[in-house]
Amino acid sequence: MMEEEDGLRNRLTRQGEEALGRVAQELLENPLVSGALTRAFEAREKAVQAQEVAMGALNLPSAADLERLTRRLRSVSQRLEGIEDSLDRVDERVETLGSSSALENRLLAMEADLERLGGKLDRSGAQLEKVDKTLDKLETKVDKLGKGATKRAKAPASRSRGSKSAKAGR
Image 1 (cartoon, rainbow, N blue to C red):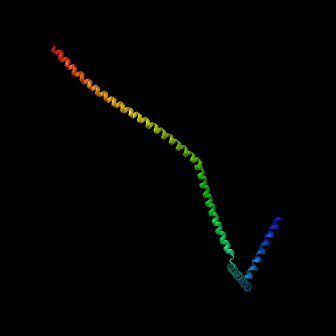
Image 2: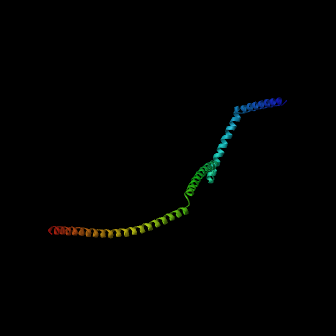
Image 3: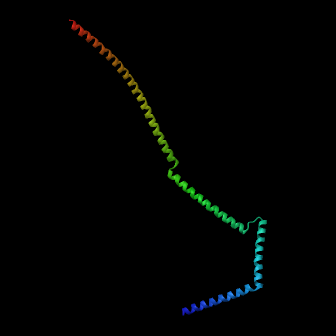
């Protein structure tokens, strides 16, 4: 029974569509109806143009102007979103690098370390100067001792020669 209703419904729908198609075809082929439709579309076009001229004279935007403006606004909005996304990425990178106060603290700690090292270098330099002076004094003493030892070594040799010749003469 259900299948018969579906079949009947489909047949009636098809017949109705065919009948409407024939009526529409006959109307479009009728010169009086097609002329009226053509004049109606021309009148509509002229009305739209007149409306645009009147709105332009009143300095009001037309629908086309509003559409163009809407497209432009969407484009600017998308660009702005892109810029905001880029700014967010830059902000995240800055945060990962550390805050400026953390950097300043690190730089201050490095500066303090350098000052401490500079002080140690100054003290080491002063100690090296003392050692250098001490070495100069020691070198001078060694030179004096060496000269004195050379004189003494030469003096006993001449004495011992003299004593040998004295022994030989006896």
